[in-house]
Image (cartoon, rainbow, N blue to C red):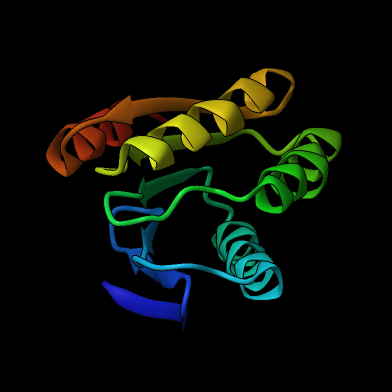
Length: 133
């Protein structure tokens, strides 16, 4: 795997099987750094014309209200408006509050172009991605 981008939010890798591997780091985040991280994720997907990502959120802190709003209003909305279909395999956070914030974000994806599944283990997430076109 090749490292594409890294900042305090996490690491973004190019997986040789044709998907973005998004590894969230532990700890608090600031909104501009979070926005940069997801913007680079979108750029990586578009650059390779990939429609799949694996988001490893096991160590992630809960989303803030500002992060949730930005994901909904910018990241998901722009994908939906340009017709960019995206599949996300998400390895769920260990922290119960992070899981709750993830559920709030996932509720917002109902009107987006994102199809996702939640997994306890990375291996299960990878298997699901392999089944997709």
